[in-house]
Image (cartoon, rainbow, N blue to C red):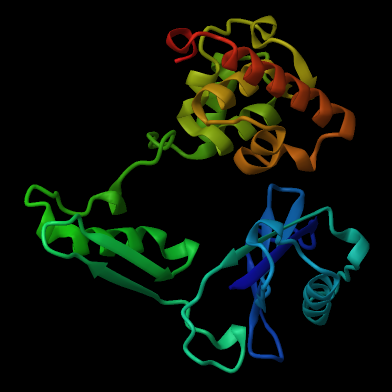
Amino acid sequence: MIKGSHMVVPRIHQDPQAYILQNNDGRIVFVIPYLDKFSLIGTTDVEHKADPRDAKIDDAEVDYLVDVVNQHFTHQIKREDVVWSYSGVRPLCDDESDSPQAMTRDYTIELEQQGSQAPLVSIFGGKLTTYRKLAESAMRKLEPFFDKMGQPWTANGILPGGDFSCGRDDLAASIKQRYPWLSNETAQRFVDTYGTCTHQLMKGCTSEVDMGRQFADGVYQAELNYLIQHEFVQHVEDALWRRTKLGLYLTAEQSDAIGQYIEQQRVSVQSLPLSEAS
């Protein structure tokens, strides 16, 4: 079980490109422009022996990333600059490497099937950046059991909200023209987050009043309702960190108000008869 941690700091450089930093230990660390105002720095590779649900960055990892960045950039950072961090634990195949960094990131797929029982596919290892290729490989393992299985299609599949041929700036301009009460910044954020699904979010809104309660600048009740109804949001962390990164911009009071609203909506849905809740 290998933990990888990332941290976010105020933007280090104004260049549009990301940087890959080669460290003395043979690892690389990336610095990526993040949400215009920030830089995303990562990642680490350390063995994790505790519950994966409790994974979080530790002081040694912060110091490691700070040190690598400061070796390469004129703009120096310090531990206190970290505004947010996140960590994940991934299972890697034990190839008897000397260190977590040297362990293979490749995946292994095994298929078991006895007699007429349903086949069992087990996946070991892998990484987020190759999840789609991994999924296609898993489906190919199952192909002998499904004679009507289609061919791989996801390489050219359009993700929800991605059905537009113009650039994001052009789409944001059209959103702004259609909903003129939105600020330029909010229109751009909606496009970056939801794409053309913004129109579903804004359905029925003919003025700012229709957007409902405003919890913070550009954060309306209509967006929270969309996240609850279409993005499976049940808790404040879902809305502010997992579906969006609004948590980077909001005060504690604003976040608490959003959390209370989401909890109220969740409780009200749970109290409805099943036919109405669905």
